[in-house]
Image (tube, rainbow, N blue to C red; front, top):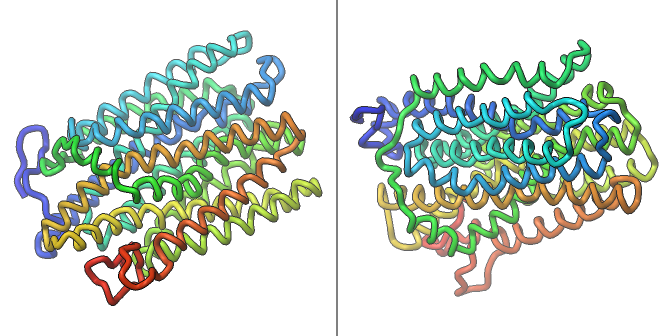
Length: 452
């Protein structure tokens, strides 16, 4: 492993166990640690409006529909910027882009600090909220970067830990808001806490992270990933897992306020629990996928998500706050588990495709890294759009029915379709002679998706 000016590593082969045990693992873990920190703060900035709307009482002049629209647009921008953020790693280097993307978080944070007061127009809040969407892009660049550092056998754990550590930025900012609301502080206090933290994250990335020269700018990889049907199949499944996680993270507090008449403080007491548990369990989902296969874990996870959603529908109709809150927290946990298992599937799919092309060793690993890294940006972007759909569904449900019940019925149908797609594409045994991906097809190893 050699380096050049600017902390560039010229040679990197994590699949070589000697290299990995001697120097690779230590370097990869160090980059993982500081990548998690930057991504963590990015998630906090992205989802800060899920907290800020709790501070915005009648004096701000916003209706519940206005607030759901605001959080929907923030989620939308966070989804869209994930595509360019993915490829920025190849253009600038993982370390260099982490520094830049962390520094950019100052823009929406300082802007929100400036305008957060009664009398500000709704259009101004929308504009400043759109800026916060850039925090969602940090996830895509971080996942693409860390994917290149770890061998296939460790990707489920590493990607799960990286994403889980980032996801936990959601409950952390909600916990911070709870403490500030409880102390009768205002939203500017919360924003003021994050401004120096952003600077610290950028400085630590500059001091301790590395760029990989092997992750070269490859526009062909993006085109190949976009043409591959598995990219879009996994995007749909990721809508069901991560789209649910981020959508519920934005909406949970508002649902409690509007459907169960909770005060901002009462809502803040419970809104952080679901995102916290969902974030912590994400690495567990990745580890289970490493052991049992991502497709199997994902399949049964959708079954459980459907069951939790059915309970939510009952609780919503019966106006049972305790049952509703408990089921929502369980659903959050399941979204985190599914986040880990679905992201493990991505490198496994492209590694299996490499074997199907007759590639072995480092050539197969390079092919898998190339396409899985490119596809992660697209999958992450489309998956995050699920959060937009969830907030818009809640907005329409409250406008039409005065509760979130209608939205939960739609979510239940979505999870049923996700279950069917997972089974049909990755677990159903194909008819003899077909090329359908099948993790159990031991008789056709060149087409086996056993690692998916």
